[in-house]
Length: 487
Ligand code: FDA
Image 1 (tube, helix red, strand yellow):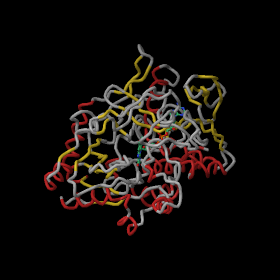
Image 2 (tube, rainbow, N blue to C red):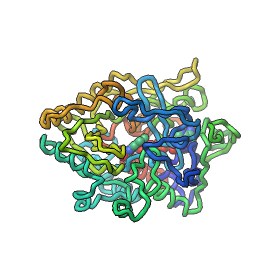
Image 3 (cartoon, rainbow, N blue to C red):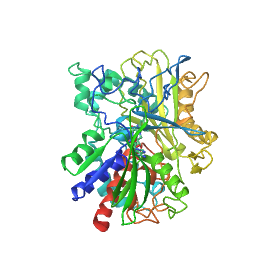
Image 4 (spheres, protein in one colour):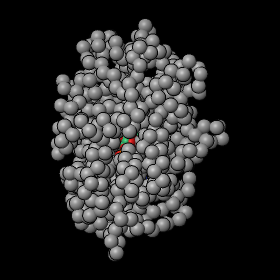
């Protein structure tokens, strides 16, 4: 279940091994244009396609220059889910391709020396020799042409970010991306329809980005062994009397209403509903008696990858450009000294803002757990908003210094009135069914043969950088083992 990174890797590799796969995805297929001729809505003009089952948008940047940005939209199975828990809003992609549909494409491999602190039971040597390279190849990860980047109008914001980082003594690191750079060059030249240069990102990219639909899932489809069911939501998994598992699936319409309930039997079930989807579902199935033998590590060790956002107000001599590519290319690495890696992010508003914008990934000890709330009939997450202070402090090790050096200040108008930090959200949910805790060292769930976790739920709360390359590489490692020994 789930067609993000973990689900796509599992589907492709199982199919290549001769296994028939049914990929069940609760979001839409995202293969049909709307009335405007485009499949996806623009970042600055959210519409019915933008949000998962909301009647009002919940944009990560909720304000600009003091004006609230959110607006009413028709309730629809849109592409970005802003899922609210008590202390945090977790943003996730919905649709065939999962998070690859909405993310910034930043394809970052963690530093090798940091890896043992992220996944202590995984051999770094085999990850860096085999599975990271395999993941990067499968995802179509490439580097931006530096010479072009140096003069491209659309990366002026990133060059300003570099100048400020380096003047304060921080390493500025280029990071690869899954965007098709040749396409972006043609966008810049006016030769093709714009996508990254039209600011398209969190509600989907109409061109240029190599989402999973164009990589792993295209290859999976070509095997002829993978059936995909969009707008189908898995609700229950229980052992079947004759072996295998009974899986209950609700087919929903674009208002989110259930129109049909299907019951199928599967030899094996791979949970790839994302950290939140898998963590919540397993917590409920254990608590309600569908899978009572799951161990008590299920639902635990969940983290936000230390995400916190902020903006800085630059001087008038440091314009960041009204044309900004929506695909980030670089970050500021202060992980060792300050526990922060800051993505130099675009603010693609179409006007000159003189603002630098950053998504920081920080080292934080805080971990939450999913808990079954029987009275309310739902799964809660025990996150405490105050825990973000650790992340803010880490991010400040970079930006306080840059502000002092440049004589600049934080923007206070992006996340509320006079509010500096975007500390209410994460883009990078991780954990909830952790490797070596809820599962064995290859994602086999304890308590049940033939049930596997193969997504971001396996990773205990942090990847030190943007997570999807690590999720993909770990899935490649685990599925190889499962195919070799379990099938
Ligand atoms: P993922 O969330 O991708 O897929 C899970 C799928 O399961 C979804 O499609 C969901 O609809 C489906 N599902 C859930 N429950 C289900 C059920 N019960 N039945 C059926 N289907 C179900 N990372 C990065 O490395 N670089 C970046 O630049 C960014 N940028 C970024 C921007 C934004 C806006 C977001 C929201 C996220 C990012 N990320 C990112 C994060 C990255 O996208 C994320 O870590 C991965 O998509 C997670 O991959 P998974 O395979 O774990 O789940």
